[in-house]
Length: 591
Image 1 (cartoon, helix red, strand yellow):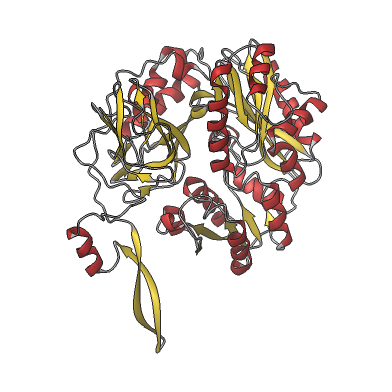
Image 2 (cartoon, rainbow, N blue to C red):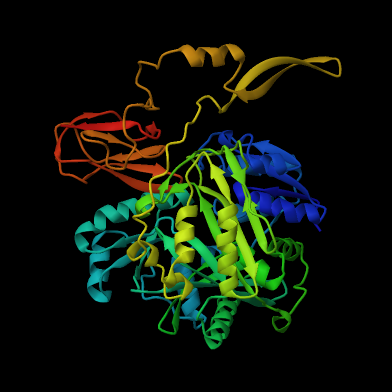
């Protein structure tokens, strides 16, 4: 078994991996960006190494620096978690060259299945049909129009090298194809480092059902059970459950066997998930995620297995300790993602910021996997998942009631969260009767009654800043760098009293008088969240209509259009592409 495990991820998944590793007697090693210097996963690790920069591309996707850390840390295994490098074959191969073991499938399997286009081809060759779609990357928006004419509208654009809904867009007509494709490509590039996209027919009322598989290096592959992930917004999951409700056992068996066929077709080992769309008693191959899934805890609850431990044992060359016939599933489990978002009006606007209070629920059958504690800050640079609340009960009805009870005990203050929407979903008859689909939250669930989150007072200057100090260690005088809130005392004092810079800042100063709303207030267009301006869609002197998009803002790996509050002429733009903005900042003036 491994002695030293480097986890090249952050947040709750890094903490989750560390817990199993520590129980197995393995030393855990973290990496962290400048924004994550004092993050929970860093505090939990036995050792930690710094990465340069704050953004994902500067830090957690910095291959060269991570490879240096693999060598410096003397790690004999590397776990990528999910996201970032977890489905990057080049990274897996680079880890192998260091002599360390990549905790995941072989690079060839990642290449085949990590590319959603080649995975469709591989699945079809294994006898598993997919949703009608393309098997080449889109080169021109005209291809979308031709595909829509053949297969009907709407059409789904999907990132070829990603998952989790990132880079997925729906096109309703050929006129919007060019703009929507560009948006999908931008988001795919930001999240996965590649912008290739492909097309699929968009099903009318599908359920998203995925099958957890695990295989060893000796050719043994088993399916552990399915998860229903149909409760989504922006094609990203909110609530998952296992087993899938109102799901025929015959279909379950067929889907499990199909998942094993797909895995064996690409020589797969370690944990993975084969995803399907299910509609009218038919299922279609969607994609394979060659990694651990966010929602893996509910599979652990119904099977009693530790998937991270299984991953590590398979990576160390051990055979699976059970056969397909020996897998037992019992009860019902539900997982709720607690995200830093304001769900008011069904908008689910990202809401980064510091967490001032975090009270976790407790009791039998309740599990919380968190990446934050009170005092931590949810950064605009990363995913907004604060924690995952998972519950287990003998029946689905009991699990729903347990989830509602656990949510009522959960207290998160400082940032708005998705908890009000989670409660509305779990309480709704459509969800309780399992008549919902992947489109239900956005198309039918009425969240108009959810009030906007109250503004949270955020004190500035909480970020850790470098401070050079002299120290004496074992009699030797050394100059060391400490990271303190707001820097040295004299700098903190200056920050409290100095006026804003009058230069051309990349950080837009906060306008306290402006209302924070997606469409602005009157002629003032403001942003409702922290983020980075990806694109400015208007120019000074241009006339706009009410609800016309003014800028595109990227926050927490999602793009959001900021709209004009009313018709008029743009008289002032206070931002440019690449600028960083905060909640309530003015981006444009319309008269």
